[in-house]
Structures are given as structure tokens and as C-alpha cells.
Length: 299
Image (cartoon, rainbow, N blue to C red):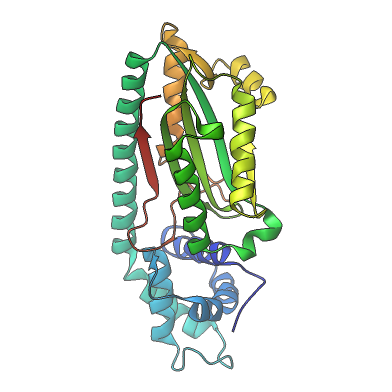
């Protein structure tokens, strides 16, 4: 059975939010009951045991199964009694969820440290670096066609292009890619590309070219946001935070801005603009799937 009205990423993200509302916030039992009715069966039918789910999702699934005598029956309803049971069972997973959150935040802080080391190495090696930031995701109307396996396939192709350093990736000396999952934006990634400033310029063009490459890789399902668009750069410049475009190592403020901008990729405090929640980690992954990759090469 399929539920085309809610795609994989939105389903998983909504469940994660519900579990966190029950465990760490204040939510009325009637609201929990309504959401259980909308989310419970879709998750059971879409659940793939070969994937790795966040503790919040596992807790939701196992708690619901403990309550329902026949988990797959569509005749069963979530009333106040079995919803209260579900919430009680959910409470037993609170420590596991907190521990996972702590581990993920610790990993992002570690990623931030190694990325900063990479960046400072590059500034010692090159007098000028061209910083390009592009956010890659999927069109709202096509998100239901994309699952986590599609995301990995698309990113594998992107990383191949980055590694080959052809076309819009020529002159690349460093890069970082952070994969995330937003409540409304679904699966997406923040991409930082650093070019040898003696060989490449026209950062606006490069940001657009990378975005168009992503659209090609995803067969038209993808979308992009070019942070290096002139309007965006003017806004950053006006606030004194411009850290993209051509950066000279002799301009200390510009260097620090560039590093600060780059480290946004690994910031555990990023807030989802739609939910005002800090967590944008992937809630479902393929085995051994890396959510952050980086590299330095000779350009």
C-alpha cells in the first residue's frame, strides 16, 4: 500500500517532530491521537528494515506496535486510552533519543574543527581563494518522487564531478558537502566549493553552473539556491558578513568571514525556518551513508 500524499522525507520528519513534542514539549493528547491516525499506518507500510532510522522514528514504531494488537489493521482507531499507552511507552526511549542527539551534535562539532583546519591550510597555500556556496535540494512538486536512495545516487554523481574537476569544477582546491533533512524542504545539501583564485573567478556564474549541473544530475527533479547571486552578496556585504566570492588572505576580516560562512555547513544550531527546531540531521539513512564529506586537492 502506498500513501502518495506524504513522501518519505516528510513522513519521517513529521514523526520525529511528534515524538519530540511528546517527550520534550507540551502537546495535547487529542493532537497526538490525530497525528497517530495520520502517520502510523503509512510508516508501517513504508518502513524498510534495511535503512537506518533515527531513534525518534524507531521509538514511534515500536511504541505503536506495543499498543496495537494487530498493528496492520486499518480498523483500529487511536482513542485517548491507547494514545496514552503509546505516550507512556514512548517515554522509555527518551534517554536513547537524548544520547543520539548528543552524539550527532558532538560529531558536527568535530566536523567543524576539521573543516576549519582545512580552510586555514588553504589560505596559507593560496593568496586568493574563490568561495562558492550552493544549496541543492528538490522541487516541492517532485519531493514525493525522491527517497533516500535517490539522494545518495544523485550525490554520488555530484561527487564524481567534483572529484574529476571538469567544467564548472575546474580549478577546485577544496570542498565540503553537508546533507540535511528539513521539515518542508525535505532532503537537501549545503555545498561549499573553493577554487584557486588565480585560475577561477566569476563566482556568480560558477554557483549557477553548479546548480544547473545538479538539475541535470537529478533529471529535472532538483532545485538550487545560488548564495553567490549578486543580491545575496550585497546583503551580506551590507551587514559586514560577506564571506563568499573572491577572498584575499591579506584581508583578515574577509578570511574570518569566509571561515565563519563555511562553518555554517557543520553548525549543529541551524534552525529549520518552518518549525523553529534546531535539528536538521538526517532521520533516515542507508547503511554507512556519510552525511558530511570534505576534501582538499591541488588546483
